[in-house]
Amino acid sequence: MGAMPRPSAGFRLFAALAALGAWALVAVGGLVRVTESGLGCPDWPLCSGRVIPRSEKTAIFEYSHRATAATVTILLSIVAVWAWRRYRDRPDIVVPALVAVAFVPGQALLGAVVVWLELPSWIVGVHFLVGALMLGVAVVTAVAAWRDEPAGATPGFTRLAVWTAGAGLVLVAAGAAVVSAHADGACGTQWPACNGSFVAGGGDAAIQVVHRLLAYTVAALAVALAVRAIRGAGPLFAGIAPLVAVIAQLSFGISLVLVGEGRAHEPLAALHVAGSGAVWASLVALAALVLSPWPVRSDRARAAAPARAR
Image 1 (tube, one colour):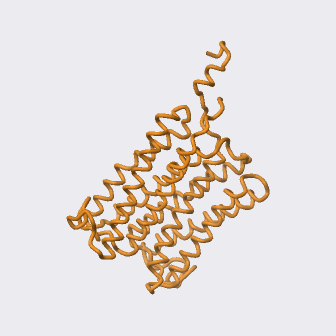
Image 2 (cartoon, rainbow, N blue to C red):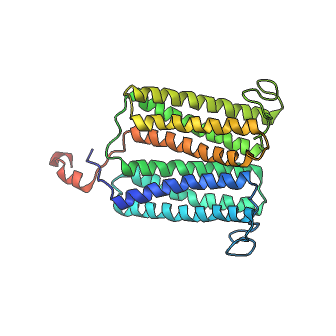
Image 3 (cartoon, rainbow, N blue to C red):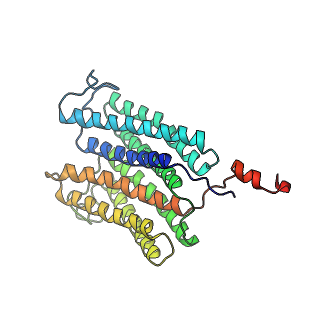
């Protein structure tokens, strides 16, 4: 395998901005949902037939989401074109960069359909899940752009990081199911119980409890990663970061249940959605960091290869 050509500082900056923008898109989308601003702009791509939205909270929130989506589209496109033109000998960079930008048309169409059909729950859930997947691929691109070599990690730590990222994706899907079913308050204001029992209250309550159990599972796996990282089996900062994000996310989620529909409900719900994106991004970043990159066969590496290998 040839030495990995180091991307330019400009490319690394844009890759990081694209990943940060993809997280912001998830967070702003959560704000739109919890404030019920999805129809703040009842048409698409304009907002009530206007380029500049009305000075109403719901219109401003929805338009902010669209503006964030447009910004992320530009950033992902720049990264993809740049990667294709300059770093085609780095498949660990160019492939996720192209996959990330390939998500854009489908995600835009889902967003338009959400508005045209006036917020059908299952499409809202799918829209959220696709946004999380786009975030994950953007994070993989950024990690590949910034690292020179894989972070030192034992095979056991690497496997645990990959499995935990997989569990994080399942948790994101469960969160999308909660969104689709409007099951946020299905367990009332009780935690860890649900309507006076382990689970009571019908199908929506069961969806909420499954979501909770998956959150506990990811939390336990994050603890295991942090302990192993502290013991030297993996990168210290990146190994602890998922646990920090999980602790914050659990505090948002539990507080959201306990406060019910009070004044703190909307900000806590928005923080919970933003936190879900942070947990997912930290898990993906760790897995991408410790996995070995795809083989690189650059022109320089081929030129240096022995004649018998040509």
